[in-house]
Image (tube, rainbow, N blue to C red; front, side, top):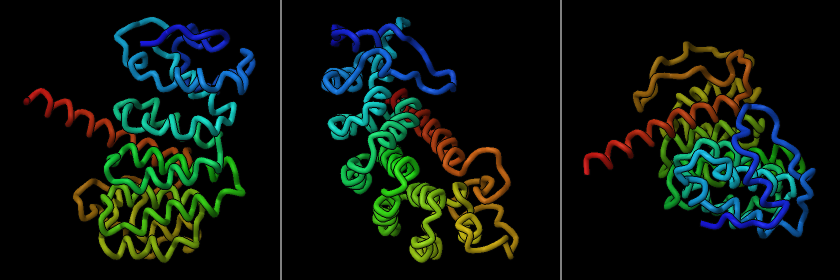
Length: 268
């Protein structure tokens, strides 16, 4: 695996674990600029280094590199970073941070992310991370809001064949963006019984969250058709935003899937 990077990119290999919940460092203060983008892409996509069995600080280099690419608004990184969604499928840091990186890069990533989400071969969790990226772009670049809503709606139109979880998270991102224009489509997905309501709640919860209803008018169902216990709806009083709650639920479900994959490997 490559570890010989030129300065100031090489300095990212010395920073170590900076996952303490605080804001990301300003990597540009290290002297990073557009000329370092190719090397930063090389480091960010160095999955062998990311998964290396080492306690040294260098294993955190890829994380610092993709953050730096976000701060540089590096459009050149849009395509190279995409495979990380599925190559790092078991990494919480990748699934949580790459959407923020794409949010920083901005609207130029929308068509590429739309194509990625639309490809079922990538699997549920990588597609969800890409969909989350579209939501983050809309939040960080308000002028891109219509295009991001259109991309998310484009995928939700496939609700008959999408996994119920995928539909639920797509709806959560549309609700977070207050995309009332998508309400008829969201209603159809619920009416077809193709939504995991442990994510947003039922159609009535979604209407409240979108501002189409002031409050529920019927008792909330205890279980949804796929037998997952109902989680608190995003419309309920909360300390975290609906996007943060959706991310937490995705993380929990992803960990369940990871444990299942590990168990299946042990059986072989």
